[in-house]
Length: 353
Image 1 (cartoon, rainbow, N blue to C red):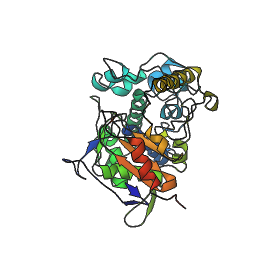
Image 2: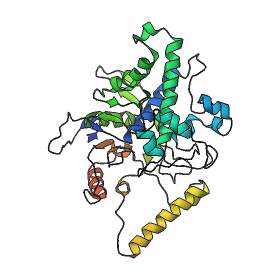
Image 3: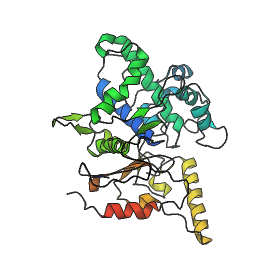
Image 4: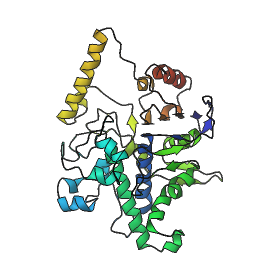
């Protein structure tokens, strides 16, 4: 736990220490958000025609060949899980997600090959998709390999374009903010699996949260303040995505959520799905089976977080100047009452002045 930039509490289960590097699973998606932001910040003014921007279209060659609506997908749509591409985020049997992660040569190419749309890009259809993140990773790879080929390789002291791409997370992010333990895995094609596979010690995950708490600016040990993310990137990231019921921004989860479809303006399918979910919870309550309280309800409305599927979290609470990291695994719903835990922790810190 980090308060006002300093570690104020730290505890590890038996067998684990501050040096234990643990996987973040889908917290890696929020890391991918930062890598996209850094790329835009550092290279948006490049003379290279491949320079990336949030609203650039024609992101992949095969999408350009297919035309609309594939060619209309932007980085903004992908970061917000609002491309409209059909996808099944299911982890039972062979699904889109499991095939991508464990059977395909290229995760990003597999996800980009989907031929059906639930809705046109940006039309209020939100669907959480690991495939979407890995499309972003493929786009980043193609960008950095192209950048290498258009610049002197001696300048970067790297032997080839693929190595230049592999080095970029450490060169542009990890080394800058001191995430020395962080390691990202690639798929068999050599592209980072930014949806799921990054490993780091808890303190380094906290550094990552602190970067966002500080609005994308990092203060080095010598006192120099470096802008790592573009100005306004954190605000963009924490702006609710249309169709998500205000619970999702750009690859980060938000605590501004609503259960009222009219307040969200999303696609009819998303509203129907949310109504069915709410009705199911109501039926459980009527039967005397109280639904487990969502831990996020104990947090202030401005909180946002990176989340792994086994209840790993990097929680950023700007109104408390607080970053909380949890890397434990919860497969038993009764293992930890998150609502009680987070509520007690956050309330013990005064609001920031």
